[in-house]
Structures are given as C-alpha cells and as structure tokens.
Image (tube, rainbow, N blue to C red; front, side):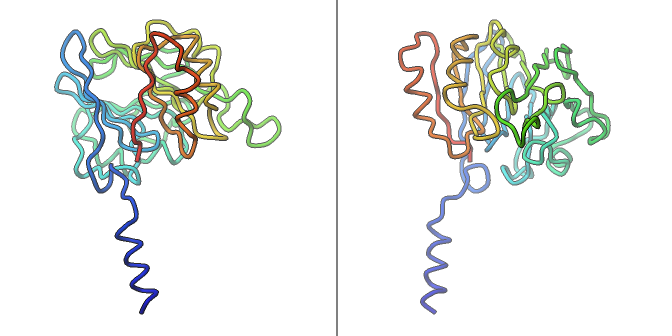
Length: 244
C-alpha cells in the first residue's frame, strides 16, 4: 500500500512537458508584414504562425498534442529519424492544401511531399525556403559512419516578411552553415553526441551572426555553457526556451 501511494505521489509530482500537458512557450517577433509567433513544442519540434498561416517543423506526436494544435499550411521535415519524421503527426495536422517539404532522406515516406535537395531554393505555400545541408563532421556512430551523413538531411531558412529564420535540423557547424548571410533568427541543435557541442554552436554563431540565437533540440546539454561562451559577443542575443 505504501509503495502504491509513493508511486502515485511521484506521478503527481513528475514534470509534464509543456507541449503535452501545459502551456506551450511562445515568442512573438515583429516583421515588416506583421508578427511572427514561435511555439516551442519540444525536442526538435517547432511551430510558426505568420500572416494567417501555420508552419510546422518536424512534428512528432510524443512532443505535442496535435489534436489541439492548428493544422498546417506548410510542414517542413529535416530528415528521416523518428524524432523528426512522424507520419502520424503529419497526418493529424494536414488539411486540404497542406504543402509538405522533406529532405532527400525522406523521399517516398510521405505522399505528395516535395523533396528539396541540399542548396535548393523554392517558394512553397507562399514562403521562400532555402534548404541548407545538415550533417556531421566529427561525431560518428562508428568509424566512418556519421550520425547524419552529408547530402541527405536539410536545415531550412524560411523568410517571414523581412525576417530570415534558420532551423538547422540535426547538424554540426558545417562550412555551409558558417557561410550563411543575413540570418535574423537561428535555431541550432546542441544534443550530444548527435549534433553540436556548445563550443560548436558558439563557433557557428560567431561566423554567421544571427541576431537571435535559440539553442534547441538540446537534450541534457547545459545551455548555460553557450550563454557563457557568447556573453561578450555583441549583436547576438542567446534566448533559452523550454523545449518540453
């Protein structure tokens, strides 16, 4: 009986991810054509609302209750791993006219999806999108086998009015990332060992200098390390948000 009571208390006291049982954290950023609302669903999952349209990035059912979230005008999938590609979540938020963009590694996984190759630019659902290569250089699954091989995964630069937002996907601080220009907002992953260390994120940020930097998909990595690394870097604001 005592064990049952203790178990019940632990359940009641356990934290509930905001995206599943509580209020999703949001930021609102002004653009030249109205506000952009960013919802931090969880892990690598984000939602953008702008100009009456909704953009979901890497929707995954275990990160959010998609029955309660608005349907998508545009869905962006960075790569094929199960914590980024969830056909059930995609189906839940799809409606007539929903456009889906996927990386090469997801080709054939979702009916009607448009495959964007690394380096390709397109306008989809009224949004200008650039596909940025996302891959590992250092971190390997085994010798010669990176967690994310070059050429198959995407990050995306999405333009909202005069605001250019970069969602990097699962990647390290690649030359292509560091060569980006005119990025206002960047979401850079920091979950180890699969993506970047705080030092890698700081290195990339110093190279392409986003005005606002959100570490996301950071798992158990200490985000304060990144804040410390960029504390003296003028013009780059590091914002830490709960990701479920």
